[in-house]
Amino acid sequence: MTLVRRLTLALAVLSIAIPATARAQSATYLLEQGIRAYNELELNDAVDLLERALRFSENGGLTRTDRARALTYIGAIQVFRGDADSAATVFRNLVVTDPRYTPDELIFPPEVTSIFQAVRRETKVVALEADSESQFQIGDGWFSVWLFASSDHFITAEIRREDETPTRVLYTGPIAESLQLRWDGRDANGEPAATGDYVLSVVSRDSLRRTLRTVRMPLDIELESPDTLDFPTLPPDSLFRPVHSSSRPGFEALAGGLLAGAAAFLLPSVVAPDDIDVSAGGYVVAGALAVAGITGFLVSGPGEVLDDNVEYNESLRRQIQQRSEEISRQNAELRNQVGLRIRTRGPTVLEPGP
Amino acid sequence: MSKRRVDPSILPLVALATLLLSSPLAAQGPIHASFAGFGVAGTNLDRLVAGATQSFSGTTVTGEGRLSFWRLSLDARYAEGDLTDDLDNTLRFVEAEALIGIRPIPWINLQFGPVVRKTEESSGSGTVSFWEARALAEAALIPTIVSGHFGMWFAPAADSEDIDTFDNRLGAEAGLVLRAGRLPILAHFGYRISHAKFEQDFREETVQHLYFVLGIELGR
Image (cartoon, rainbow over all chains, first blue to last red; front, side, top):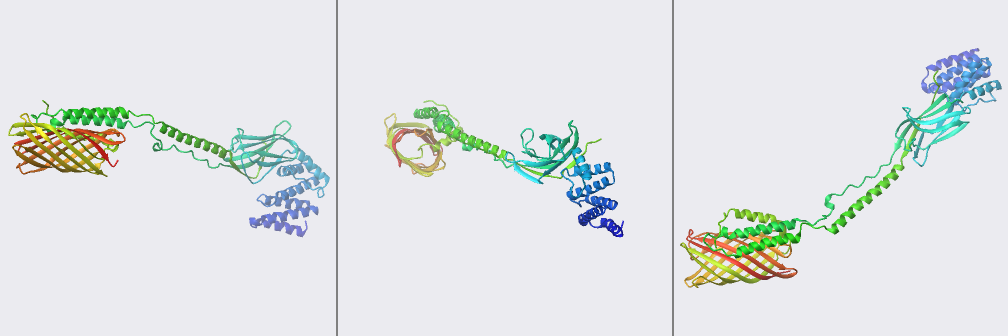
C-alpha cells in the first residue's frame, strides 16, 4: 500500500467522525476511491474502501445504484480471488437489493458477469415500484405498481391488512421481466377498502410453489367519502291539515243548548218569589234552547272526513317521499364517488425462515 | 202554577258553565250584528203589597235593536201595552231600557244602563228607574242559523218619586235568535223575568215577558 493510499484510508477513517450531513459525500468519495483502487488492482484496499462506503450507506449515504456498483466490485474482487461462494453471496444480496441491476460488461469481465447472471437466475425476487402517493376515485382509476423480476418465476401478489387479514388477491401467476399490477381499491367483496394500514405482499415461489421470498410494500390507505345529503325531516304536525272536521262545535252546541235550556227552566224559580205564578213561556224557551242545541249537534255532526285536506296531506307526504327517494339516489351516487388516497413506503424483503 | 224553589246560588254556576261550554261558538255566525225589530210580548206583572197579590197580564208591543261596533254595543228595548187583572182593572205598562255593552271576550257581553218602568192605572201612576248591570252570554247553536243567549242581571240602584227605599232587583233572560240564511231577517224569541223589592220587602214586583220580535239585520 502506497503512502498516498494509507493517507487516503486514514482520511476515510477520520471521516466517520464528520457530521451526518456529509456522509453521502464521504460514502461517494469512499466508493470512488474503492473503484480507483480496484482499477489499480489494489484489491484489499478496494474491498476495505468499498465495504466502508457500504457501511456509510446503511445510514443513507449511497444511492441504490451506487450500492449496487459497490457490491458488484466487491463480488468481482471475490471472483478474482477465486472465492466463488463469497462472490455468489455478494451477488445474491445485490440481486435481492436490485433485481433489475446488471453489471456493465464493458467494466467487468465475462467471468464476473457470467457468475452474476447465474446467481440472478437462481435468486427469485421482485422489485416493487409505485408512486409515493396515488389518489383516485373508486370505479374511475386504480393504484398502479410495477413489478420487476430478477428472473422468470411464479409469484402471488395480494393486498393485506397490516394484521395479515387478506383483502384482495391481485395476481397469481408467472412473471418474466416486469409486470404492472392495478388495484381498483376494492376488497374481495367489491367494497371500497376501509381507511387503514395495508401492505402489498408479493411472494416469489419456486416451481413447487414454495415460498422463496416475500416483498412487502406498506400502504397507508385513506378512504375519502364525500358528504352525503341529509334526508328531509318529517314536517311538524302543524303543516298537516285536519282530515276530519272538528267535532267540537257539535258537542259545544249540544252542551250549550242543554245547559242554557236548563238555566232557562230554572230561571223563574230563582228570580220570582214562591207565590208568583210563572209564565209557561220560560219553559217553552228552555225547551227551544235544548232542541236547538240538539239540532246543532246533529247538523255539525261528530266530524266528517275533509277530502280536500286528505288530498293535501297525501300530496305533502308524496313530496317528502319523492324528496327522500331523490336524496337516496344522490347519496348512492355520492357513495360511488369514494376516493382513495394511497401512500406507499419503501418495500422490504423477507427471506424465508430456516 | 206550582213550582219548586231552587237555590239561587247555583244559577251563577250554571251560567258560567253555559258560557264556558259555548264560548268558541260565539265567534261563529253574525250573532253580534246590529239589528232592529218589532214584535209582541205576553207580559205578566205581579205586584205584592203588604201581603196582597195583584196580577196583571196582557200583550205589549215591543221594539228592540242593537248597534254593534267592534267590541262595543248599544242595546235598546221598548215595550208598551195595557194589562188587566182578574177584576178587569187596567194598567198601562211601559218599560224602556238602553244599555251599553262591551265584549271583553267574544262570547260574553257585559252591559250597563238604565231601565225605566212606568205604570198608569186608575189609582195613579208611578215611575221607577233602575240602573242595571247585566252579563249576557251569546252562542251559536246552529251556525249562521240559530244562536242562543242567556243572561242575568241585577240593579244596584233605583230611583223613584213614589218609593222611599229600594231593596234589590234581580233578573234573568234566555232566548234564541233565528236567522233566514242569507236574508237579513231575524226572529228573536225569548223569555225575560225580573223581580224587584222595595221598602224592605213591603212591596215586590215581578215582571215576565214572553216575547217574539221580527227584525232586520243592519249593515249586512
